[in-house]
Amino acid sequence: MPGIVERGQGTPIVVVPGIQGRWEWMAPTMTALAEHGRAITYSLCDEPTSGFAWAQDRGFENYVAQLDDVLAATSAERPVLVGVSYG
Image (cartoon, rainbow, N blue to C red; front, side):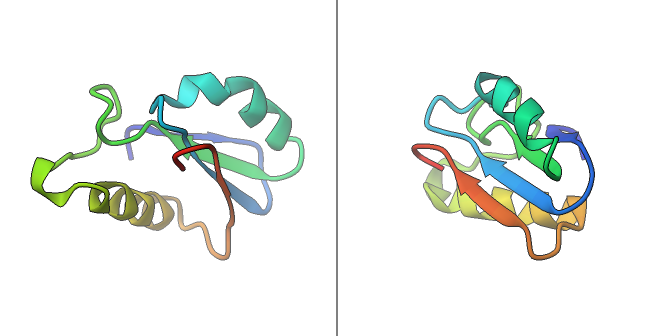
């Protein structure tokens, strides 16, 4: 799925980005986490480059649905979830 960034292998570690929205702010963190498992992240859906849908009327639910989509698209079973700030 476009918009999903994966590094490394092993236990899935899903990093939910902070309020700035773009995954690139966490690139060094993703590199470090990839040494310990399969690091997965994405840009938040209200970020125009994310590749995910955004519906104004759904508010915060957009982010929950996006996380569900990421988990399904990556087949990440029992992931370690890491939230940054807003995430």
